[in-house]
Amino acid sequence: MRVLGDFALAEEVVQDSLVAALETWPEQGIPDKPGAWLMTTARRRAIDILRRDTRYREKLALLERSALTPKPSEADDRLRLIFTCCHPALSQEAQVALTLRAVVGFTTAEIGSAFLVAEATVAQRIVRAKRKIVDAHIPYRVPEGDELAGRLDGVLSVLYLMFNEGYLSRGAQIAMRRDLADDALWLTRLVATLMPDQPEVLGLLALMRLNLARSEARFDASGEMILLPDQDRSLWDHAAIADGTATLERAGAMRASGPYQVQAAIAALHAEAASWAETDWHQIVILYDTLVRMADSPVVRLNRAVALGHFAGPEVALGEVNDLAISLSGYHLFHSTRAELLDQVGEPVLAREARRRALDLCQNPAERSLLERKLRA
Image: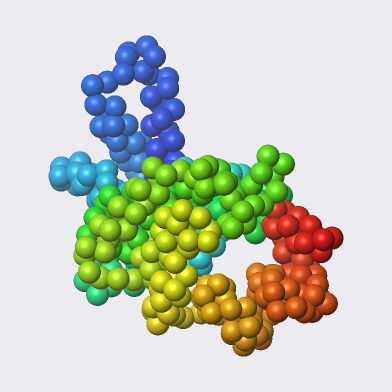
């Protein structure tokens, strides 16, 4: 891809080189440098293809010259590939699909299954994205200087979207896709390894690690959701919590705070509390105030209101939640949060109406089951 600048051709020659390896290695043995063997085979295959197509004379010259120039490391190429897949000229759906296809190695069927999208739709997104990369002359490189910060935000946004879809699926078939969350974690760890001086990458890595640490306690044996106050904290992965906290501390030492670090700090306060009653809600509200200043959004304000309710009381929280009624009218967690607060202030009829609205909007099976149980209570 670095030399060819053509996703389809790059995929074709890589697949051909793998087929050649499967045919050759069992008889001749695995070469001393398998990676170099595959690269040489892929390059030769690309030259054969390009020689037959006059449209690619310029790329052929580049490819032949590349054999004489020093090779960048595999890590450098992976980082270039991630930034190319997450280029802002592509739609976010295309960025996710292309990243999973080109970097993780998902098939179109696997991507479609992960996001509940038809395989044909995924294939079309990938084809259009590849064409856009060629037509728009999107460079295969890691941005530098002032451009890096904005482009890195886009990469992290795609990775966080992937993680959240795995952590709590929007679909109606499965509550959590652990494999997708793990893939997002793996990609984020890869970016953190390749860009160790970027604190927000470490912040996102810490956030994912801390959230996944609670996975075993989030659902019971029948798949019913268990909310944070009722979770068995002995089931939490305390090694993962320690690792996430240490990663957050590494990010903090760089003294360049950002939204992912703040969210990770909130997750760390929850993870380190010995019990629900011992949660430091005052500090969590302070962190949400910081997050509002950095990355204000109605959802951030909703989460802040929940924390404020535990610190200052449900009446105060309900007032702040009601202020978000227009901006979050189509968001099921707004209505379920409002229902909980209405119950706490002694308005069961209004709470029931809010909970029914949340159920109408919710698709996740575990969340729907939880809402239905509360409506039956």
